[in-house]
Image (cartoon, rainbow, N blue to C red; front, side, top):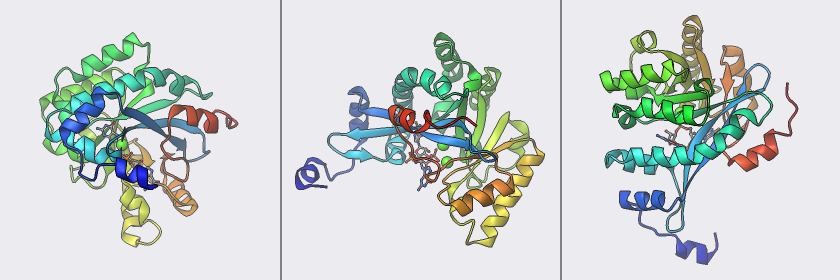
Length: 268
Ligand code: C2E
Ligand code: CA
Ligand code: CA
């Protein structure tokens, strides 16, 4: 970083007012991280990840701005911004890479407390002629700790629209396995922390084995996230993970850069 850039970046962390200001000035974008079939490496979809490049604060971690917006009750503003970006990108992402692909969107707990969320999203998809089967919704396992009827109604409506529901960061949320029977869950995303230590920690290897065996017997799919090495990729495929995501396969990137790297690859 040169000195002029360093001086331009504010050292104080952004406040929620700064985040809202950034949303207002359309400083937010979406990056998309590829997900591939663990068996044959075929591209199956993307996870949409929000990015904020602020002229004042530089690149701000989504963990920070999602948390700020959640605490201030403004997470819906981020969702509106995300839908604006997704609106122009989704047609190209779902149909522009040869195979029909899905796009996974992240929802945080507070969003699911909005009783209108799923019906509004259903109408949004219908207006754009996007089929629900092309959308995945990711909620963290810990979201379910405080589930209530509004949240469950939203999840139910999503699945009635054909949207697949995924439990993110699985293995870290202590939500209890009964949710896997009670909710219309399509699959689990094994948390990166387990993937990281798969090769070095026998306990983590056993946990991932147990999660994949259980998911398989319940007919659930499994994404392993944070795959960074060939060895992890091989172990996860052998353990029965259906889908892989991580820097080894591809970093989150804007649509145009994905079109250059992925659209030119041969279709399996
Ligand atoms: P997440 O949903 O668990 O997303 C995966 C995070 O892991 C992303 O971080 C991704 O860039 C990173 N990642 C993926 N593969 C690798 C890898 O191989 N190595 C390493 N070191 N990291 C990897 P990111 O983009 O910083 O997002 C962090 C979190 O912020 C997300 O975790 C999600 O909880 C939240 N988030 C991001 N975008 C949104 C959004 O649009 N809405 C909501 N509600 N939350 C979002
Ligand atoms: Ca996620
Ligand atoms: Ca995750």
